[in-house]
Each structure stands twice: as structure tokens, then as C-alpha cells.
Image (cartoon, rainbow, N blue to C red; front, side):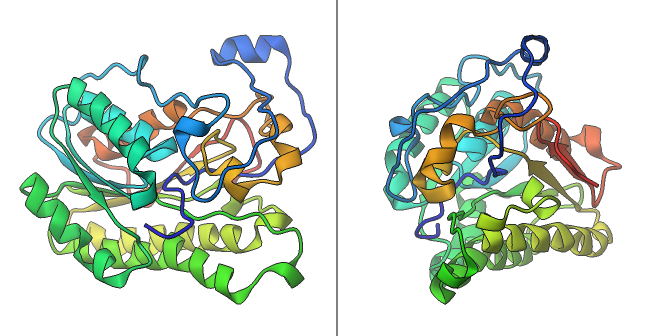
Length: 313
């Protein structure tokens, strides 16, 4: 999917070191990380990330909430998408992953985890900025999975730029192309094949509600995704298809050191949340599972905020 789109949408910004008391960390059940300054070429690989992100490989326990369902997840090679893929698989779903060809090593690793869960997994590499790939992706997933019940629009491109004067038209167009234009195209195609009871889940961000000035184009797309989710939810509900969104806060993924954040900000990434730490991808997975499951049968046009305590509506 998009050239620089590390297929893992995450919520983003850093800020000054905030409240982070030990008690908060213990209650949260996760350690606060202070990543070393590091940089990867875009789109970044989980295998090169320091410290490693937690996708739930060793911790997520399924409860058969998605048995028999078939899901396509964009940005499924690492980060949030990978955590969602692992959770969906352990909940009994068949899974297809879309991701950039350059992210193949991460995709292969996640595919191994899914196969260990005893589920069917299909890898569909390509670039979401390539319209031929984008326009054929839903049909490819349907052919691979013998149908489709869930679409997770998660792939995202995020590049930090300090000043609007330095934000090029090329970057703005690429960010919108990956983050929102592809979402329109995939959702439009999905509506033709999703059955009644099907689900579309979009990844928006805390950036839609509390934007950082160095993520101007990214934040703008996330605001667009939030509005798109509500508009589409109204239309799709008439077909019995539910559309919702998840809004992550600062989540530790390869998106961050591959120009998603200023390098010098990484050691305090997420320390400004109420929990005083960045989130791990596995902490997002239950929200997606809930929205995809029949347990959310009356949840439509909603946004689930998973952000460690940040400003939100």
C-alpha cells in the first residue's frame, strides 16, 4: 500500500513528559517505554524496531467471537493491523492481509503467528496508491476468503514536518491518497460484497480531535476519516452493514521512527498521556474485535477511543 505508508495507523504525537506515576503503570499492566532515538527508512519494519512492539503474539486469548467470519485488514503486516490480525485469527476468523511489498518480512512473521493459530491466512501485497491494486483488492480478498464479512481500513501514511512551508504538495497528496482516498475506494467496493451483518472498521486517530502541528496533513486526513465514518455509517446501515471507527492515541509501531515522529521526541513518546506511557498495538485489538463481532450489533457510526487518556470529544 502506499509508498511510505507503514501499514499501521497509529495515533501520534509526542509532548512533554506528563504524569506517569508507578501506580498508573501497574494498573495499566504495561511498562512505560522510552525508545532510543532511531530512524528507519519508510515505511519501517517491526523487525528493526527497538524495543519490539507487542502485537499479542504471546498474550491474546481468543473466545470464538469471530468464528466463521472473513476479514481483510489493510496495513496488516505490523503495528495495529498485525495485532488486529492476530486477534481476529484467534477469535476464529479467516484473514487476508494487505501491505506494502517492502514490508514482506513483517507480513511473513505475522502470517506464521496466524497459521500457528490454525486459521486460514492470505497475503495480498501491493501499494494502495496504485489504483489498479486498490480497485482489485476487495475482489482479491473475496476470491481468497470465499467471501468477505469484515473490512478493516487501517493502512496509514504519517510523516512529521515541522513547518507548513516545508510540507510539499507531493506529500500532502500521498498522505490523502493512502489515508482517505483509498478508504473511499475500498469501502465502496466492499459495500457490493458485504452481507447483512457485515462490518467496516476505520482507523482514525486522536489526531482528528487533538492535532499536532507537525502532523498537519496526517491530522487532516484523520479528521476526514472520522466524518467519512459517520456519513458512511448512515448509508450502510440501510443495508444492515455496520460502520465504526477506532481512534488510537500514541501507539508504538514502526510508523513512529520512520519519520512519523521527530527522532529526538521518541524517548518521551506517549509520556504525556494520563497513563504516562505509549500504548502497545495489542491494546487496540479488543476494540476492533468488539466492533467486528455480533456483540456490537447495535453499535453504528461510533468511534472507540483507545488513547491512554487524551483530549477527545
